Image (cartoon, rainbow, N blue to C red):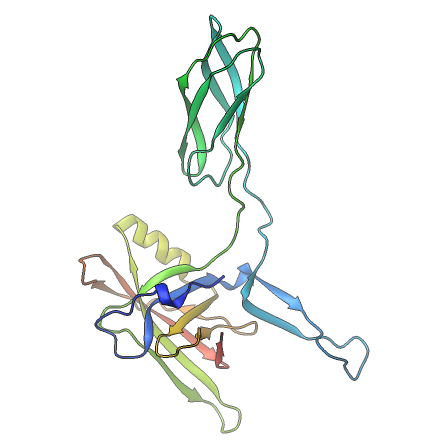
Length: 254
């Protein structure tokens, strides 16, 4: 799951050849895949790889909301209570009202923080002699993905240098990025990022191919450091300028 680099606008203050955003996801969200790809010398040999293309399936899926007590007034539906709000709703789910011998009852759901919190009747319908059933649409499937952060204004670069003994070099990489938001949002985001081993992708905007630098691998993750400073974007959004660090093998892939 990778953002198309053509949709990552190249900022005017960039002269370093990387696109405007970095993509971050916790290392724990990725599958380790056993992938023998050729005959091996010894039976039982295998190859394990970690790739930023393959996310795990979340262990706990989103839950469909369920309706509770339904109330009739005369032969129309007047109230649909919510028994279980469900999880993972991004937009209000459609409500199907069926049975009861009547027609024409319609309603819309109200959601808050991904759960259905109420139902507003938009039409009572007519002819209901017994209680109908109300069914909420399924929430979207729960998936893992990358969070997108703006690179820090005026520091839009990825730096890398080799370290270690000749012939056994690894690469120390560092990228500055911007975490925006209100005071409370900002601190919640920073709490989630700090001390979280991750995979970070940075697009090479000067390459016609869809090439990314990957910071972080199966053996060693990328880390966000705590020495952040305040910053302001060109459009006035305030936030923290943080650093992401990675000291390991260079990984560049399509």
